[in-house]
Length: 278
Image (cartoon, rainbow, N blue to C red; front, side):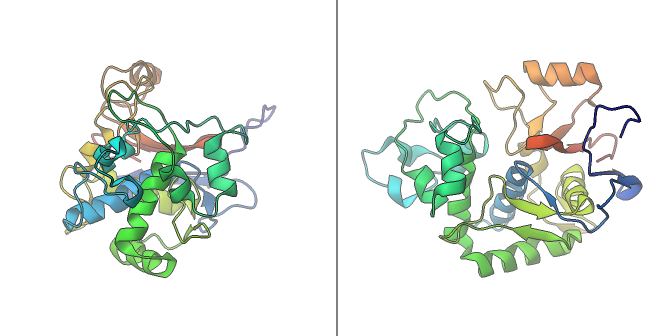
């Protein structure tokens, strides 16, 4: 914290180069094992879990999502793909005002079944513009629940396929009352564990000789989504491309080719593959 303010309220910083921690610092009351709230950094974790399923050919992110509520032949939502949801271009109307009165906030904090609440919205994906919303990621979380199982099965899967290979030891995923993981924003992990997730993406989805994510999944994450003026990829924000946001962040010093997870109140995992830096 600066000696004379204003307060930055920074809880933890971890810097990884070439797979090694080269610097870290913690605020009073925080340490290497303290779980830190993700907010929307959880969306990047959701992208990783879809990568595991894509690696095992359990789903194709470019094929229709097959949400049960959308399967009627005349339902325009039947054409929505996981990739459209990951990139926030499905046309979902909830938005992301975070006012407490908006539908996305009410879905997160009042709905027993968050995925069902998000899936119930009527919309058409044709010609949809980019629109950031937690609803997209609770629909994705519902897809994960149906594919993997309820809380216990989901925790086992995430630990076996992602957390344990990465060495992520201090992770807590929250679930709603219907057993859907809160993949839009309610995951807790230590700063080191969040850095480990970043290093997986910096290293093209591999840890040592083991491939955790499909080849090119990191590129999928940082590839710019057309029409996303702030510079959004898939589950990550991107400093690649010609969006106003990407150009501005590069001008501020963001490395070429970098991308980042981002959560409310300032959580950030900046990934710079060329520099081997997280």
